[in-house]
Length: 93
Image (cartoon, rainbow, N blue to C red; front, side, top):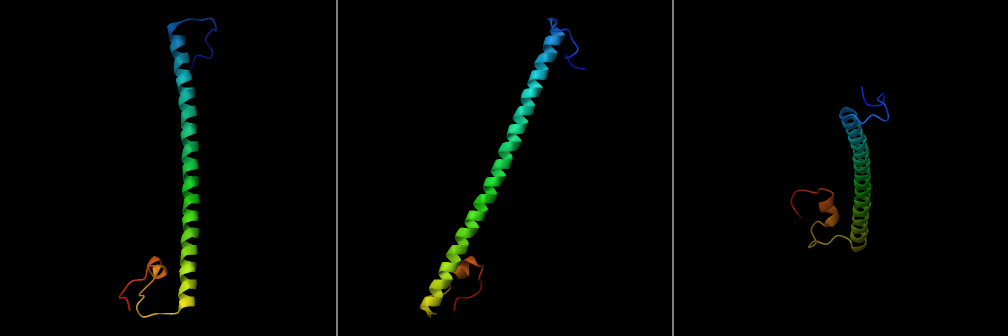
């Protein structure tokens, strides 16, 4: 099937319709590849964003730990940011 075997000079309506459909299919395939490429780029950017957030929060937790070690424990402080970010639960002491 297809219009590849039709005569080049043929101006038949059926051949014109076939060539039009062929062009539309080629365009649809190109758009499908463009969508797949955009989806891959989006997934890659999500992965990079997640890694950046992880690094940022790790730095925040490390800074909170260093600050707590320098200051020493105090009774009025309660749990700090690092404790809340690490999922600490229960009563504050």
